[in-house]
Image (cartoon, rainbow, N blue to C red):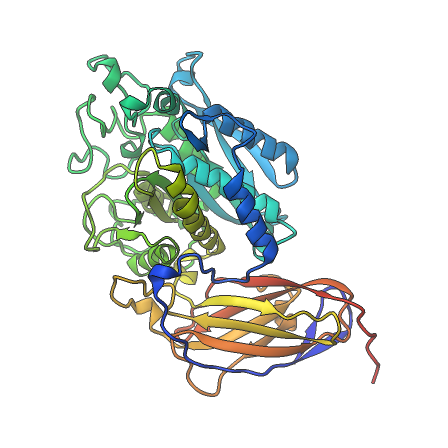
Length: 520
Protein backbone atom coordinates (compact mmCIF):
# COMPACT_ATOMS: atom_id res chain seq x y z
CA UNK A 1 0.00 0.00 0.00
CA UNK A 2 1.44 3.37 -1.00
CA UNK A 3 0.88 6.64 0.77
CA UNK A 4 1.20 9.95 -1.03
CA UNK A 5 2.09 13.17 0.68
CA UNK A 6 0.17 16.25 -0.41
CA UNK A 7 3.57 18.03 -0.52
CA UNK A 8 5.30 15.54 -2.78
CA UNK A 9 4.55 13.56 -5.91
CA UNK A 10 6.64 10.66 -4.66
CA UNK A 11 5.09 7.75 -2.86
CA UNK A 12 6.15 6.33 0.46
CA UNK A 13 5.52 2.84 1.65
CA UNK A 14 4.33 2.00 5.12
CA UNK A 15 5.95 -0.89 6.92
CA UNK A 16 3.77 -1.39 9.95
CA UNK A 17 4.46 -3.54 12.95
CA UNK A 18 1.25 -4.17 14.86
CA UNK A 19 1.30 -4.95 18.55
CA UNK A 20 -2.07 -5.61 20.07
CA UNK A 21 -2.65 -6.14 23.75
CA UNK A 22 -5.23 -5.70 26.44
CA UNK A 23 -4.45 -2.78 28.75
CA UNK A 24 -4.97 -2.73 32.46
CA UNK A 25 -8.25 -1.14 33.49
CA UNK A 26 -8.12 2.57 34.39
CA UNK A 27 -9.15 4.10 37.68
CA UNK A 28 -11.26 6.81 36.09
CA UNK A 29 -11.29 8.87 39.27
CA UNK A 30 -7.60 9.62 38.80
CA UNK A 31 -7.60 10.01 35.02
CA UNK A 32 -9.73 13.04 34.24
CA UNK A 33 -6.93 14.96 32.58
CA UNK A 34 -5.95 12.17 30.27
CA UNK A 35 -6.67 13.11 26.69
CA UNK A 36 -7.70 10.64 23.97
CA UNK A 37 -5.37 12.39 21.54
CA UNK A 38 -1.76 13.41 21.16
CA UNK A 39 0.00 15.48 23.82
CA UNK A 40 2.62 18.16 23.26
CA UNK A 41 4.73 20.50 25.34
CA UNK A 42 3.24 23.49 23.52
CA UNK A 43 -0.25 22.36 24.50
CA UNK A 44 0.77 22.17 28.16
CA UNK A 45 2.42 25.60 27.97
CA UNK A 46 -0.75 27.17 26.56
CA UNK A 47 -2.79 25.43 29.24
CA UNK A 48 -0.58 26.87 31.98
CA UNK A 49 -0.84 30.34 30.46
CA UNK A 50 -4.63 30.15 30.36
CA UNK A 51 -4.63 28.99 33.96
CA UNK A 52 -2.17 31.52 35.37
CA UNK A 53 -3.00 34.90 33.84
CA UNK A 54 -6.03 35.02 31.53
CA UNK A 55 -7.74 37.87 33.37
CA UNK A 56 -4.79 40.12 34.20
CA UNK A 57 -5.49 42.78 31.58
CA UNK A 58 -9.23 43.00 32.16
CA UNK A 59 -11.64 44.15 34.85
CA UNK A 60 -12.77 41.39 37.17
CA UNK A 61 -15.59 40.60 39.58
CA UNK A 62 -14.78 41.94 43.02
CA UNK A 63 -13.37 39.24 45.31
CA UNK A 64 -13.23 36.75 42.40
CA UNK A 65 -9.96 37.44 40.54
CA UNK A 66 -10.33 34.39 38.31
CA UNK A 67 -13.51 35.75 36.70
CA UNK A 68 -13.61 38.68 34.32
CA UNK A 69 -16.71 40.80 34.75
CA UNK A 70 -19.12 41.56 31.92
CA UNK A 71 -17.17 44.58 30.71
CA UNK A 72 -13.82 42.85 31.04
CA UNK A 73 -15.09 39.82 29.17
CA UNK A 74 -16.57 41.97 26.41
CA UNK A 75 -13.24 43.77 26.03
CA UNK A 76 -11.41 40.45 25.93
CA UNK A 77 -13.78 39.11 23.28
CA UNK A 78 -13.19 42.05 20.95
CA UNK A 79 -9.45 41.94 21.62
CA UNK A 80 -9.45 38.28 20.59
CA UNK A 81 -11.20 39.24 17.36
CA UNK A 82 -8.64 41.98 16.71
CA UNK A 83 -5.63 39.78 17.45
CA UNK A 84 -6.90 36.72 15.57
CA UNK A 85 -8.96 38.39 12.86
CA UNK A 86 -8.54 35.46 10.46
CA UNK A 87 -10.06 33.07 12.99
CA UNK A 88 -12.51 35.07 15.11
CA UNK A 89 -15.50 37.21 14.24
CA UNK A 90 -17.93 38.76 16.72
CA UNK A 91 -21.53 39.20 15.61
CA UNK A 92 -24.45 41.00 17.26
CA UNK A 93 -27.35 38.54 17.15
CA UNK A 94 -29.96 40.42 19.15
CA UNK A 95 -30.87 42.55 22.11
CA UNK A 96 -31.35 41.97 25.81
CA UNK A 97 -34.72 42.82 27.30
CA UNK A 98 -33.60 46.28 28.45
CA UNK A 99 -32.02 47.04 25.05
CA UNK A 100 -35.25 45.94 23.33
CA UNK A 101 -37.19 48.66 25.18
CA UNK A 102 -34.50 51.28 24.49
CA UNK A 103 -33.33 51.35 28.11
CA UNK A 104 -29.73 52.68 28.14
CA UNK A 105 -28.79 49.94 30.61
CA UNK A 106 -29.46 47.30 27.95
CA UNK A 107 -26.95 45.19 26.04
CA UNK A 108 -26.32 43.56 22.71
CA UNK A 109 -26.09 39.77 22.66
CA UNK A 110 -22.92 38.69 20.89
CA UNK A 111 -21.68 35.45 19.45
CA UNK A 112 -18.03 34.63 18.77
CA UNK A 113 -17.55 32.58 15.63
CA UNK A 114 -14.24 30.74 15.58
CA UNK A 115 -13.10 28.85 12.49
CA UNK A 116 -10.43 28.57 9.83
CA UNK A 117 -12.61 26.46 7.59
CA UNK A 118 -12.95 27.30 3.93
CA UNK A 119 -15.78 24.78 3.61
CA UNK A 120 -19.21 26.09 2.65
CA UNK A 121 -20.84 23.99 5.35
CA UNK A 122 -18.40 23.25 8.18
CA UNK A 123 -19.54 21.21 11.14
CA UNK A 124 -21.17 23.45 13.75
CA UNK A 125 -20.96 23.60 17.54
CA UNK A 126 -22.94 26.15 19.57
CA UNK A 127 -22.03 26.84 23.20
CA UNK A 128 -24.14 29.08 25.41
CA UNK A 129 -23.36 30.45 28.85
CA UNK A 130 -24.93 32.97 31.16
CA UNK A 131 -28.59 31.97 30.93
CA UNK A 132 -28.51 32.36 34.71
CA UNK A 133 -26.40 35.41 35.69
CA UNK A 134 -25.43 34.23 39.16
CA UNK A 135 -23.46 31.35 37.69
CA UNK A 136 -20.04 32.96 37.47
CA UNK A 137 -17.96 30.15 35.98
CA UNK A 138 -19.56 29.34 32.58
CA UNK A 139 -18.59 32.52 30.64
CA UNK A 140 -15.02 32.36 31.94
CA UNK A 141 -14.69 28.70 30.93
CA UNK A 142 -16.04 29.43 27.46
CA UNK A 143 -13.74 32.43 26.96
CA UNK A 144 -10.75 30.35 27.95
CA UNK A 145 -11.88 27.68 25.48
CA UNK A 146 -11.96 30.32 22.74
CA UNK A 147 -8.47 31.53 23.68
CA UNK A 148 -7.15 27.97 23.78
CA UNK A 149 -8.45 27.33 20.28
CA UNK A 150 -7.03 30.41 18.59
CA UNK A 151 -3.67 30.20 20.34
CA UNK A 152 -3.30 26.58 19.33
CA UNK A 153 -4.13 26.98 15.65
CA UNK A 154 -1.10 26.08 13.54
CA UNK A 155 0.78 24.83 16.62
CA UNK A 156 -1.37 21.93 17.83
CA UNK A 157 -2.48 19.34 15.30
CA UNK A 158 -5.78 18.59 17.05
CA UNK A 159 -6.81 22.24 17.26
CA UNK A 160 -5.68 22.94 13.71
CA UNK A 161 -7.74 20.04 12.39
CA UNK A 162 -10.77 21.16 14.41
CA UNK A 163 -10.72 24.74 13.16
CA UNK A 164 -10.05 23.65 9.58
CA UNK A 165 -13.25 21.60 9.58
CA UNK A 166 -15.53 23.09 12.24
CA UNK A 167 -17.08 26.40 13.28
CA UNK A 168 -17.31 26.94 17.02
CA UNK A 169 -19.96 29.46 18.07
CA UNK A 170 -19.86 30.84 21.62
CA UNK A 171 -22.47 33.03 23.28
CA UNK A 172 -20.82 34.02 26.54
CA UNK A 173 -23.83 35.78 28.03
CA UNK A 174 -27.38 34.95 27.01
CA UNK A 175 -28.54 37.25 29.83
CA UNK A 176 -26.16 40.25 30.05
CA UNK A 177 -28.68 42.53 31.81
CA UNK A 178 -29.01 40.09 34.66
CA UNK A 179 -25.25 39.56 34.79
CA UNK A 180 -24.74 43.19 35.82
CA UNK A 181 -27.02 42.62 38.82
CA UNK A 182 -25.33 39.35 39.74
CA UNK A 183 -21.89 40.97 39.68
CA UNK A 184 -22.77 44.15 41.57
CA UNK A 185 -25.45 42.91 43.99
CA UNK A 186 -24.25 39.43 44.84
CA UNK A 187 -26.60 39.10 47.79
CA UNK A 188 -29.54 38.85 45.35
CA UNK A 189 -28.19 35.72 43.59
CA UNK A 190 -29.86 37.01 40.43
CA UNK A 191 -31.16 34.28 38.09
CA UNK A 192 -33.70 35.85 35.72
CA UNK A 193 -33.65 38.58 33.10
CA UNK A 194 -34.89 42.14 33.79
CA UNK A 195 -38.39 41.95 32.31
CA UNK A 196 -40.78 43.32 35.00
CA UNK A 197 -43.78 41.62 33.43
CA UNK A 198 -47.10 42.93 34.69
CA UNK A 199 -45.52 44.78 37.58
CA UNK A 200 -46.93 42.45 40.24
CA UNK A 201 -43.53 41.53 41.71
CA UNK A 202 -41.20 43.43 43.97
CA UNK A 203 -38.10 44.73 42.17
CA UNK A 204 -36.01 41.97 43.75
CA UNK A 205 -38.17 39.26 42.14
CA UNK A 206 -38.92 40.49 38.62
CA UNK A 207 -37.88 38.72 35.45
CA UNK A 208 -38.24 35.53 33.45
CA UNK A 209 -36.05 32.46 33.84
CA UNK A 210 -34.65 32.29 30.33
CA UNK A 211 -33.87 28.59 30.67
CA UNK A 212 -37.54 27.84 31.28
CA UNK A 213 -38.74 30.00 28.36
CA UNK A 214 -37.88 27.78 25.37
CA UNK A 215 -40.71 26.24 23.39
CA UNK A 216 -40.43 22.65 24.49
CA UNK A 217 -42.84 21.49 27.16
CA UNK A 218 -43.18 25.16 28.00
CA UNK A 219 -45.81 25.93 30.62
CA UNK A 220 -45.59 22.53 32.30
CA UNK A 221 -45.46 23.44 35.97
CA UNK A 222 -43.82 20.15 36.93
CA UNK A 223 -40.54 21.75 35.82
CA UNK A 224 -41.09 25.52 36.02
CA UNK A 225 -43.34 28.06 37.72
CA UNK A 226 -46.30 30.10 36.50
CA UNK A 227 -45.74 32.60 39.33
CA UNK A 228 -43.95 35.70 37.93
CA UNK A 229 -42.22 36.26 41.27
CA UNK A 230 -40.62 32.79 41.46
CA UNK A 231 -37.04 32.13 40.38
CA UNK A 232 -38.08 29.62 37.72
CA UNK A 233 -40.95 31.64 36.20
CA UNK A 234 -41.41 30.44 32.61
CA UNK A 235 -42.56 33.74 31.09
CA UNK A 236 -45.75 35.01 29.52
CA UNK A 237 -45.55 32.69 26.52
CA UNK A 238 -43.07 30.37 24.79
CA UNK A 239 -39.94 32.26 23.72
CA UNK A 240 -41.45 35.51 24.95
CA UNK A 241 -38.05 36.94 25.87
CA UNK A 242 -35.84 38.68 23.31
CA UNK A 243 -32.73 36.91 24.63
CA UNK A 244 -34.28 33.50 23.94
CA UNK A 245 -35.50 34.63 20.54
CA UNK A 246 -31.97 35.72 19.63
CA UNK A 247 -30.46 32.36 20.58
CA UNK A 248 -33.11 30.39 18.70
CA UNK A 249 -32.89 32.42 15.51
CA UNK A 250 -29.12 32.22 15.46
CA UNK A 251 -29.16 28.47 16.10
CA UNK A 252 -31.52 28.02 13.15
CA UNK A 253 -28.87 29.51 10.87
CA UNK A 254 -26.30 26.93 11.97
CA UNK A 255 -28.02 23.58 11.86
CA UNK A 256 -29.56 22.09 8.68
CA UNK A 257 -33.27 22.57 8.27
CA UNK A 258 -33.49 19.17 6.60
CA UNK A 259 -32.80 17.27 9.82
CA UNK A 260 -35.73 18.83 11.70
CA UNK A 261 -39.02 17.09 12.28
CA UNK A 262 -42.26 18.41 10.80
CA UNK A 263 -44.06 18.02 14.12
CA UNK A 264 -41.60 17.47 16.98
CA UNK A 265 -44.26 16.77 19.59
CA UNK A 266 -46.17 14.26 17.45
CA UNK A 267 -42.86 12.59 16.50
CA UNK A 268 -41.40 12.67 20.00
CA UNK A 269 -40.61 8.94 19.94
CA UNK A 270 -39.00 8.97 16.48
CA UNK A 271 -35.18 9.03 16.59
CA UNK A 272 -33.29 11.61 14.61
CA UNK A 273 -30.81 8.91 13.63
CA UNK A 274 -27.08 8.79 13.17
CA UNK A 275 -26.65 11.14 10.20
CA UNK A 276 -27.55 14.38 11.98
CA UNK A 277 -24.86 17.02 12.25
CA UNK A 278 -24.12 19.63 14.89
CA UNK A 279 -23.84 19.89 18.67
CA UNK A 280 -25.43 22.31 21.12
CA UNK A 281 -24.08 22.61 24.65
CA UNK A 282 -25.44 24.84 27.42
CA UNK A 283 -23.07 25.56 30.32
CA UNK A 284 -24.41 26.20 33.83
CA UNK A 285 -23.33 25.83 37.45
CA UNK A 286 -23.35 24.23 39.93
CA UNK A 287 -23.40 20.66 41.22
CA UNK A 288 -21.12 18.64 38.96
CA UNK A 289 -23.56 17.17 36.41
CA UNK A 290 -23.53 16.28 32.74
CA UNK A 291 -27.08 16.49 31.38
CA UNK A 292 -28.77 15.59 28.10
CA UNK A 293 -32.37 14.97 26.89
CA UNK A 294 -34.71 14.47 28.25
CA UNK A 295 -34.74 17.10 30.98
CA UNK A 296 -38.51 17.74 31.06
CA UNK A 297 -39.30 14.29 32.51
CA UNK A 298 -37.61 11.11 33.66
CA UNK A 299 -37.95 9.57 30.19
CA UNK A 300 -35.22 8.44 27.81
CA UNK A 301 -35.07 10.04 24.38
CA UNK A 302 -35.31 7.98 21.18
CA UNK A 303 -31.62 8.74 20.54
CA UNK A 304 -30.53 7.79 24.03
CA UNK A 305 -27.82 5.33 22.97
CA UNK A 306 -25.95 8.14 21.23
CA UNK A 307 -26.66 10.87 23.76
CA UNK A 308 -25.80 8.72 26.75
CA UNK A 309 -22.60 7.57 25.08
CA UNK A 310 -21.63 11.20 24.51
CA UNK A 311 -22.66 12.19 28.02
CA UNK A 312 -20.61 9.38 29.53
CA UNK A 313 -17.56 10.33 27.49
CA UNK A 314 -17.82 13.93 28.66
CA UNK A 315 -18.02 12.71 32.24
CA UNK A 316 -14.85 10.69 31.73
CA UNK A 317 -12.97 13.99 31.71
CA UNK A 318 -14.74 15.90 34.46
CA UNK A 319 -16.02 13.10 36.71
CA UNK A 320 -19.54 14.53 36.70
CA UNK A 321 -22.74 12.67 37.48
CA UNK A 322 -25.17 11.96 34.62
CA UNK A 323 -28.49 13.79 34.87
CA UNK A 324 -30.98 12.69 32.23
CA UNK A 325 -34.13 10.69 31.78
CA UNK A 326 -33.53 7.08 32.79
CA UNK A 327 -30.53 7.85 35.01
CA UNK A 328 -30.58 7.14 38.78
CA UNK A 329 -29.60 10.76 39.47
CA UNK A 330 -32.45 12.42 37.60
CA UNK A 331 -33.00 14.99 40.33
CA UNK A 332 -36.07 16.86 39.07
CA UNK A 333 -37.78 17.81 35.80
CA UNK A 334 -36.93 21.08 34.07
CA UNK A 335 -39.33 22.24 31.34
CA UNK A 336 -38.78 24.84 28.64
CA UNK A 337 -35.01 24.39 28.73
CA UNK A 338 -32.63 25.20 25.90
CA UNK A 339 -31.03 21.78 25.46
CA UNK A 340 -34.37 19.96 25.13
CA UNK A 341 -35.54 22.57 22.62
CA UNK A 342 -32.42 22.32 20.47
CA UNK A 343 -32.68 18.56 20.34
CA UNK A 344 -36.44 18.37 19.78
CA UNK A 345 -36.86 21.24 17.31
CA UNK A 346 -33.50 21.51 15.53
CA UNK A 347 -32.42 17.88 15.61
CA UNK A 348 -28.95 18.42 17.06
CA UNK A 349 -27.15 16.47 19.73
CA UNK A 350 -27.79 18.66 22.78
CA UNK A 351 -26.13 18.47 26.17
CA UNK A 352 -25.06 20.62 29.07
CA UNK A 353 -22.95 20.92 32.18
CA UNK A 354 -23.51 22.05 35.74
CA UNK A 355 -20.02 23.17 36.70
CA UNK A 356 -18.33 23.03 40.05
CA UNK A 357 -19.65 23.40 43.56
CA UNK A 358 -21.23 26.85 43.81
CA UNK A 359 -22.85 29.67 41.84
CA UNK A 360 -20.01 31.95 42.94
CA UNK A 361 -17.29 29.38 42.41
CA UNK A 362 -14.20 29.49 44.60
CA UNK A 363 -11.27 30.56 42.43
CA UNK A 364 -8.94 27.85 43.67
CA UNK A 365 -11.48 25.17 42.80
CA UNK A 366 -12.13 26.77 39.43
CA UNK A 367 -8.45 26.92 38.49
CA UNK A 368 -7.50 23.45 39.72
CA UNK A 369 -10.61 21.41 38.85
CA UNK A 370 -13.45 23.14 37.02
CA UNK A 371 -11.37 24.75 34.31
CA UNK A 372 -8.86 22.01 33.43
CA UNK A 373 -11.27 19.10 33.62
CA UNK A 374 -13.97 20.80 31.58
CA UNK A 375 -11.68 22.36 28.99
CA UNK A 376 -10.70 18.82 28.03
CA UNK A 377 -14.35 17.78 27.99
CA UNK A 378 -15.34 20.63 25.66
CA UNK A 379 -12.42 19.95 23.34
CA UNK A 380 -13.58 16.36 23.06
CA UNK A 381 -17.16 17.40 22.30
CA UNK A 382 -16.04 19.60 19.42
CA UNK A 383 -14.31 16.65 17.74
CA UNK A 384 -17.67 14.89 17.27
CA UNK A 385 -19.56 17.78 15.65
CA UNK A 386 -19.80 16.37 12.14
CA UNK A 387 -21.90 13.31 13.05
CA UNK A 388 -22.22 13.18 16.83
CA UNK A 389 -24.86 10.47 17.08
CA UNK A 390 -22.66 8.10 15.12
CA UNK A 391 -19.15 9.12 16.19
CA UNK A 392 -20.09 8.93 19.89
CA UNK A 393 -20.60 5.18 19.46
CA UNK A 394 -17.17 4.57 17.94
CA UNK A 395 -13.81 3.81 19.56
CA UNK A 396 -11.37 6.52 20.60
CA UNK A 397 -7.71 6.96 19.77
CA UNK A 398 -5.37 7.59 22.70
CA UNK A 399 -1.81 8.89 22.85
CA UNK A 400 -1.18 9.15 19.13
CA UNK A 401 2.51 9.95 18.80
CA UNK A 402 5.29 10.09 16.21
CA UNK A 403 8.92 9.58 17.23
CA UNK A 404 11.70 12.08 16.52
CA UNK A 405 13.06 11.46 13.04
CA UNK A 406 15.79 14.10 12.76
CA UNK A 407 18.43 11.48 11.94
CA UNK A 408 16.32 8.76 10.38
CA UNK A 409 14.48 7.99 7.16
CA UNK A 410 11.47 6.55 8.91
CA UNK A 411 9.10 7.42 11.72
CA UNK A 412 7.66 5.27 14.46
CA UNK A 413 3.93 5.75 15.00
CA UNK A 414 2.33 4.59 18.23
CA UNK A 415 -1.27 4.81 19.34
CA UNK A 416 -3.89 3.07 21.43
CA UNK A 417 -7.59 2.54 20.70
CA UNK A 418 -10.55 1.55 22.85
CA UNK A 419 -14.28 1.21 22.37
CA UNK A 420 -14.92 1.13 26.10
CA UNK A 421 -12.54 3.30 28.07
CA UNK A 422 -14.35 6.65 27.79
CA UNK A 423 -17.88 5.30 27.89
CA UNK A 424 -17.63 2.81 30.76
CA UNK A 425 -17.09 5.39 33.49
CA UNK A 426 -16.68 4.78 37.18
CA UNK A 427 -19.91 4.41 39.14
CA UNK A 428 -22.05 3.26 36.18
CA UNK A 429 -22.71 -0.12 34.58
CA UNK A 430 -21.02 -0.97 31.32
CA UNK A 431 -22.78 0.54 28.33
CA UNK A 432 -23.81 -1.16 25.11
CA UNK A 433 -21.93 1.21 22.77
CA UNK A 434 -18.62 0.30 24.42
CA UNK A 435 -18.82 -3.48 24.17
CA UNK A 436 -17.56 -3.96 20.61
CA UNK A 437 -14.10 -5.04 19.55
CA UNK A 438 -11.78 -2.64 17.73
CA UNK A 439 -11.85 -3.94 14.17
CA UNK A 440 -9.38 -1.60 12.50
CA UNK A 441 -7.29 1.53 12.85
CA UNK A 442 -6.74 3.67 9.77
CA UNK A 443 -3.86 6.12 9.34
CA UNK A 444 -3.95 9.00 6.86
CA UNK A 445 -0.89 10.98 5.86
CA UNK A 446 -1.34 14.69 5.03
CA UNK A 447 -4.93 14.20 3.88
CA UNK A 448 -7.89 14.50 6.25
CA UNK A 449 -10.10 11.38 6.27
CA UNK A 450 -13.08 13.40 5.01
CA UNK A 451 -11.22 14.99 2.08
CA UNK A 452 -11.24 13.86 -1.51
CA UNK A 453 -8.31 11.58 -2.17
CA UNK A 454 -8.08 10.34 1.40
CA UNK A 455 -8.29 6.77 0.18
CA UNK A 456 -4.98 7.19 -1.66
CA UNK A 457 -3.23 8.37 1.49
CA UNK A 458 -4.28 5.79 4.02
CA UNK A 459 -3.19 2.50 5.46
CA UNK A 460 -5.70 0.16 7.06
CA UNK A 461 -4.68 -2.00 9.99
CA UNK A 462 -6.90 -5.07 9.94
CA UNK A 463 -6.13 -7.56 12.68
CA UNK A 464 -5.98 -11.28 12.14
CA UNK A 465 -7.65 -11.89 15.48
CA UNK A 466 -10.31 -10.16 17.51
CA UNK A 467 -9.35 -6.93 19.26
CA UNK A 468 -11.24 -6.58 22.50
CA UNK A 469 -13.22 -3.47 23.41
CA UNK A 470 -10.57 -2.63 26.01
CA UNK A 471 -7.55 -0.57 25.03
CA UNK A 472 -5.29 -2.01 22.35
CA UNK A 473 -1.90 -0.77 21.16
CA UNK A 474 -0.68 -0.14 17.63
CA UNK A 475 2.89 0.49 16.53
CA UNK A 476 4.04 1.20 13.00
CA UNK A 477 7.11 2.19 11.00
CA UNK A 478 6.64 4.57 8.08
CA UNK A 479 9.36 5.32 5.55
CA UNK A 480 9.78 9.05 4.96
CA UNK A 481 11.87 8.70 1.81
CA UNK A 482 10.18 10.88 -0.79
CA UNK A 483 8.35 13.08 1.68
CA UNK A 484 9.00 16.79 1.34
CA UNK A 485 11.14 18.37 4.03
CA UNK A 486 9.03 20.20 6.62
CA UNK A 487 5.87 19.67 8.59
CA UNK A 488 3.43 16.84 7.94
CA UNK A 489 0.32 15.64 9.72
CA UNK A 490 -0.82 12.13 10.53
CA UNK A 491 -4.51 11.37 11.17
CA UNK A 492 -5.86 8.25 12.86
CA UNK A 493 -9.38 6.80 13.12
CA UNK A 494 -10.48 3.61 14.86
CA UNK A 495 -13.56 1.57 13.91
CA UNK A 496 -15.38 -1.02 16.02
CA UNK A 497 -16.96 -4.33 15.15
CA UNK A 498 -20.36 -2.73 14.51
CA UNK A 499 -18.85 -0.41 11.91
CA UNK A 500 -18.87 2.77 14.01
CA UNK A 501 -15.87 5.04 13.41
CA UNK A 502 -14.79 7.21 16.32
CA UNK A 503 -13.40 10.76 16.27
CA UNK A 504 -10.36 11.69 14.21
CA UNK A 505 -7.12 12.24 16.10
CA UNK A 506 -4.07 13.94 14.63
CA UNK A 507 -0.43 14.76 15.30
CA UNK A 508 2.19 16.92 13.55
CA UNK A 509 5.67 15.67 12.71
CA UNK A 510 8.58 17.24 10.89
CA UNK A 511 10.77 15.71 8.18
CA UNK A 512 14.33 17.07 8.12
CA UNK A 513 17.19 16.55 5.69
CA UNK A 514 15.24 14.00 3.73
CA UNK A 515 17.11 12.07 1.02
CA UNK A 516 15.65 12.17 -2.47
CA UNK A 517 13.81 9.07 -3.67
CA UNK A 518 15.55 6.82 -6.16
CA UNK A 519 13.66 5.96 -9.32
CA UNK A 520 13.38 2.27 -10.01
